[in-house]
Length: 266
Length: 297
Image (cartoon, rainbow over all chains, first blue to last red; front, side):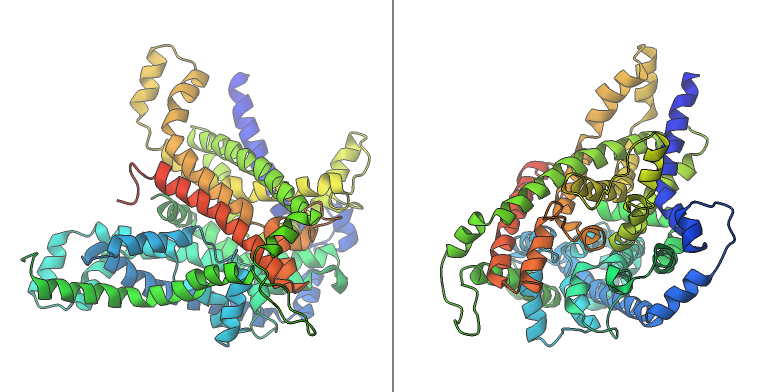
């Protein structure tokens, strides 16, 4: 008897945990009156998706989100690679003090600095642009820290061998360190993409037109009470928005979890 | 290579600064400068068309301390932290212990627990609308089965903040679970065997051996959870907008409201400074207390 209680509780918790998602997916495929009355065996319909799709420029939002995460990722890769390499392998005075300064950004969150970051973005003419949404996140202390750790574990012999063959500093970085840190790049990419695909507050503040709004902002506007869309249509829109990342996650679950672990454990 | 070689050292310094400069420029523009500017802005009065903004020193802070909404928001945020942090950590640990045991549906458990982590908070808000909406919400339907009266979870001050907390716990627990899971997997199995030979119960083993070994992970998660209790506010935009009558309003939301809805930048800046001080204290705690021994080597 006792042996079954714990597994039963574990499964019950799991069911509770995915129930909001499962219910939304179910509701998205059913008419609103069927959904709110829990008619489990009512007919399946795609009407909600059609209504949702026609209610907002989703294709544009998808494209914006895609452009946004790509821009941020490229920026982060370049900046974190260069800075992480400097912190890991170049000896110079003041390095450790600088590193502490960089680490401070782990706590001075871009999310909290919205008031003045908005002014900086405005002064640089970045309001309502994809670059404007991405800029505060590009020099990420977290990414710099991650790449520094990865570069530190590269064997010194590889570095020296490449130098003996006449590689420049950047050449060594590009031919030796970057390939050796591949797993870290993949982990960082997964964490970065899922963070910024899901980010909301800053994109909400910086964007003011459909030509730059990412999916999260689009979804919040679409589902606003003033729009009067019913809960089944909201579900359909929500399912549409989360589907790409969710599918990616379900397919590459192991890599995702591993990525968050690599990123989290220091 | 000779280490005292001056040109060599100079070259390395130039290389170092060149490599760092792009990151430093971006950090200065979007972290350091805005931090200083926030402090500066908070010392000025709110300018209107007729009366330009003038330097008022700490008056803005005094006004803030006299603002009852500010105190309401601070206490809300403390409750928010006080509920979501312990709850999500305990649930995360339970999840990890289960997902790490030899249960039949282990991989299903992991997936189910972790899935909320990959969803945006905005989407989470939409999903939970189904549970909270008074007329057809699932919570009320379940309650009705037991004869409970329908509750307007998001519409009354007594429950709105709790409803917000629930979504956050749901979103965070699975994320924290993976850190516990990873730590559990590093505990050598001999310890468990030894405990069994000594006749220790599973509870004793968990409490006396597993929990102390998980301590560094717990502290790491704690710091992250504290940061998140400032940061995770997106679902407010969907579920309550901070209402009813500010009962579920959190600090960051109030900062946003001040800056971008009421256009009172100095007030928003003053609050931001206070939040930065709190986060700074947290950073000092992490660097000076937690990381002294192992990390950042």
